[in-house]
Length: 148
Image (cartoon, rainbow, N blue to C red):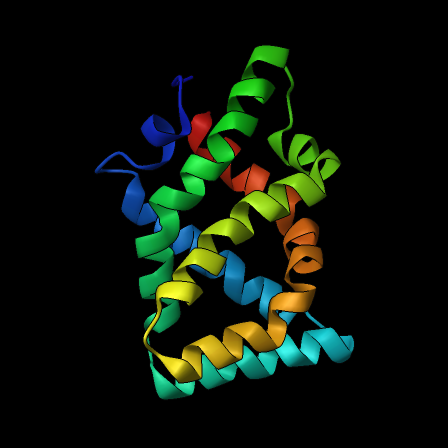
């Protein structure tokens, strides 16, 4: 097993596959949303895709290194603890992991000059942590797919 998530996920042969898997995970998570906050997420996603087709996939590609950096301390702790399921590990630390990941998207939104995209992001930011926490087991499984 590689020592760092950078090595595992961002190598030149692996990174395109990880981007595709992350994008697919996002699409699956969004399609599975329901209720008021789920509807808000779907509307925001559709708005972004309507005004800027391909933007979400591009953002996955651009944000991946920073997201991996935020996950790195969790991976290091998980690896040193000898755990077998990174998804379970992340889920048990859901609020902390969600906060770390949202720091990346919040920073990006703050520096964006695309008001429609920022408005869509802000419309769902309040419920974002709970959606991220719900997806953490799948995020961990995705990491483990490449760590194996």
